Image 1 (cartoon, helix red, strand yellow):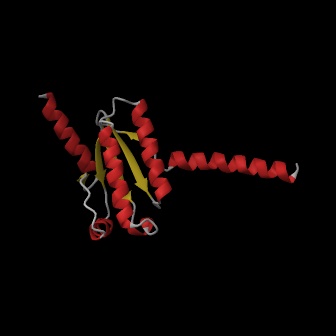
Image 2 (cartoon, rainbow, N blue to C red; image 1 turned 180 degrees about the vertical axis):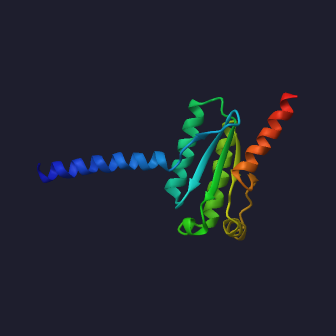
Image 3 (cartoon, one colour; image 1 turned 90 degrees about the vertical axis):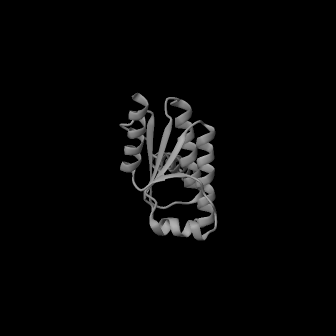
Length: 152
């Protein structure tokens, strides 16, 4: 194998692994609550990854029109995980994600924000109007309670 062929093969492998990481960075999990999905967000957050999450979720929603509720779970994100992502920028990115979801007719719900992360977003001075719950469980309980009320 020539050096050029080896470089080409390595580039192809790199692209393959990038696509795997892209798909794994924003898993979409159907919920036991009808018409609801969860998107766990964990680990290091940076602009490109955040954009990938938004793109992946919007594509999923376009293909699964029955979905009405999207729960973004930030339990696995600490302030260290967003150290290179300006908190002001993070608040704007979350606001943008929220707007995109609403324009698609979705109800975006956010859970599991670390208290220090919330402090930093508030200190950044950006006002973000989003629906939040303390945990994934409490969000599901709220949705179940609402759906039971609609059934009566």
